[in-house]
Amino acid sequence: MDDHKVHTFVSLAGGVNGIFYGPQEADRNSIHDLGAGFGAAVLPQSLFDFTGYTPEGYRGKMQVDLARRSMDPKLQAAYSITNLGRTPVRDVWLATNEFLPMINNVNPCAWFDFHCHVEKIRRKNNFRRLKEAHFFASPEDGVASPWQGSILGHYSEVDSLEELETKFESLTMVEMRETVEYKEDTYGLRSLDERGALFRYTAPGVPHCCWLYDIPKFHEEGLCTFHALYDEYVYKVLW
Image (cartoon, rainbow, N blue to C red; front, side):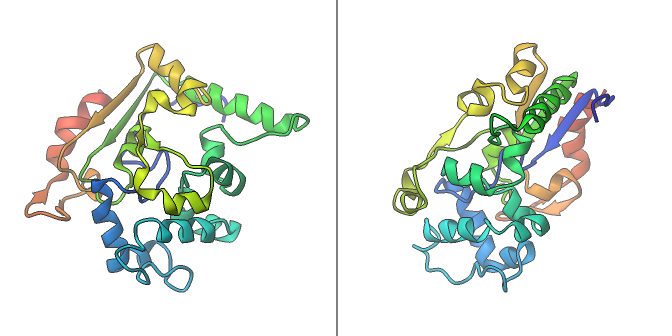
């Protein structure tokens, strides 16, 4: 779609830079919820059992097991938790994920694969056609992990899946401007930022689904109301 007329792109708590359940405190609730039933809602228990881990097992082993299970192209074709996964082992992620590396325009192309190279140019040009792009996130999201991925950050990387398990607790967040996608402007992110067209927002206390409808807060008392959230954050970027 090389002649799109989209002028403003708005992402509300999107998993735009991948999903990984890491060591930061904000991810602990998301990891707990996977074992408490949410995991079976996003990936059938017959395909992956999120409940079969000790508390220590949720701190690296589960993530490695999920990364290995998510390499199956059939699962990636059917379940978004697998094709949105961003395993922080770069070579593994690029070689096995058929979706997100392409969206981020970091998918490897053989030098002779002219179609692959042309497609990367096309995707970048299409993103750069946007007048503005707005990305919203909340530390209390409770679903998208890490929540900073919704504003284009991601976890730091290690060299192997074995290291991912043994060095899990050492993972830290990489801010957007330090990512490969931004530094190399792989799909036009830096281009938009440099012309003042890229905007990121952090909204406190907003559970994931509240960007769409009223919902009780996940891990504290109270109700999050969509209309109040829309009026405060979203309306002003659309008009």
